[in-house]
Length: 186
Image (cartoon, rainbow, N blue to C red; front, side, top):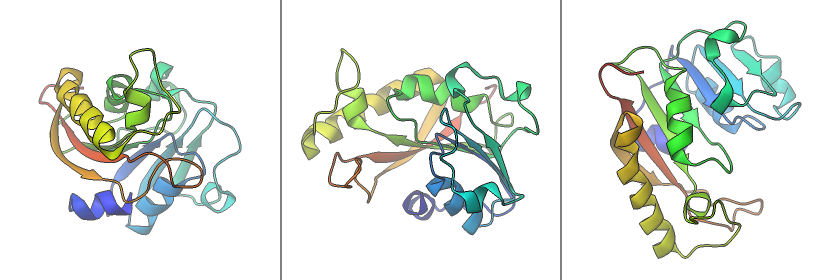
């Protein structure tokens, strides 16, 4: 996330943010270190978020929460956000981005930083564990980016993630994209 904030020149000081797919809280922690006022840490799992982040008053934990099927207004202590970060494993961007839009304040001025995982997007049959070549990953990323305007967003920028996917970080190349909701959305 630090690479995305730097590459996209995003200043999150004072922002209300949501970290969709927070897992142990890497994106959440980065947002807090950069001055976010509040972060909703959302994940389908239970008990993964780092204890230190759970104890931070700026973090609002929403566990066992599938963002694809949740209305944020139904959750306690939620408020519309300025920025959504997305790292949803096994979930295609065409599903993840509309879910992220539900967490944002009405446009303009809100944004989404989403992590594209080409190996989850490449197969017509669904996500794969296959290691893609850099060329295959890049081609898949470009195909995904072409679909995103159909989700109600404009693609403002993209950057290759300095961190590779996978447990040993020797896996697939991934990309971060900066998205902005189109006027009149969400």
